[in-house]
Every structure is written in structure tokens, then in C-alpha cells.
Length: 215
Image (cartoon, rainbow, N blue to C red; front, side):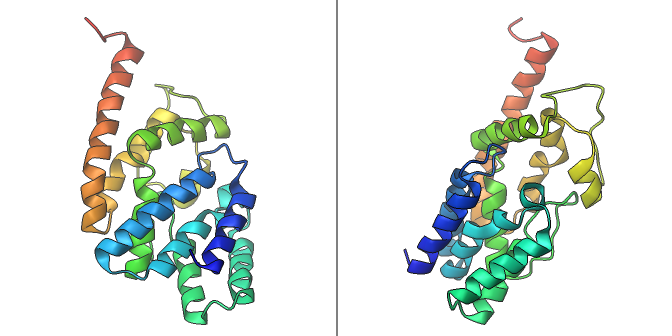
């Protein structure tokens, strides 16, 4: 680990160590591991991928408010540590364009951006993704499930962020779509099993919710 990545790790832990929304330090660490795995599989720049993974939630508006102010802080932090300007701008661009934001597609055009996006999205799938979904919904004060709430489609970023939803609906509004939005072959391979696990969980959840299990 380089001195800069070690410092980025410390900063991320300071900012996110007490998070209970599913965007805590351990989410960052899982995304970093996945990003490095995908970088090795694709030939992407490992330093850029690791740094973007470590810092990616430090500009998340749902956690910290003003995204532009947070991005300026990240840019300044990188400059103070003499990160090459081209790498710093690349890292900031990845962070700025990483999110789902309702429609799923983003402005990421580089291999490194697509690698980090895949790593972040993979952590929203599978058993960990299920756990994070219910943690996030509880943090937002959303119900576990409310059949009267329609599943939303074709949302704007604002509608996605502020509209009424539930943990159950989140699977259909976002998580079940992620497998088809992944960029790299290795991420798609990893996602297959995680996606199936979520589908199996939802079938069981629906059966227990409706009282039709174990007949």
C-alpha cells in the first residue's frame, strides 16, 4: 500500500466509520478489493481505481450534502499530496459520475471509471447487497415493505433520491437492474450468482409476507 492510499484509507475511515446507512468503511473496503480484482482482470490503472474506490462515497450527496463542495475538497486533498494532475482529475471525474441516480447509465467513459462503478454495484448485489438494502431503508425511515407503494420506473435523479419507496421496492427499482448495467466481463461473471441469490431471497420474502410458504 502506498503512503497516499494509506492516507486515503484513514480519511475514509474518519468520514464513514460511524455510518449506519450501508455506506460505512467496510463498504469502501469491499469496493476497493473488488476494484483491484477487476483492474487486474482488465488491465486498468490500479492506482486510479483504488483511490477512486477509497474516496468514492466522500462526495455522496445523500451522506454529505453539497456534492460540488465535497468534490472540491477531494480535489484539494489530492493536490496537497502531489497526486499527478491527470490522475487527480481522473479520480474526481470517476467519483462525480459513479452513482445510479435513477436511470442507471452514467457519464463514465474510461476503463478505470467503469471498473470502479462495477465494483460499487457488485457490493449492492447478493447477501451483502440485501443486508445493505435493509440497513439503508431503516436509516432513511422507509418501511421494509408496503404493498400500497407502487414500484417506480423511469425516474429522474431527484425522484429516485426523494420519492417514497421501501426496502422491497428498492430491489425492483435498482438492484435487479444492475446485472445488465455492468461494464466488464469479470463483473458480469461475479454478478450472476449474486443476482440469483437476490431473486431467491425475494421469492422467499414474498412467500413469507403472503403466508404461502411451507404449504
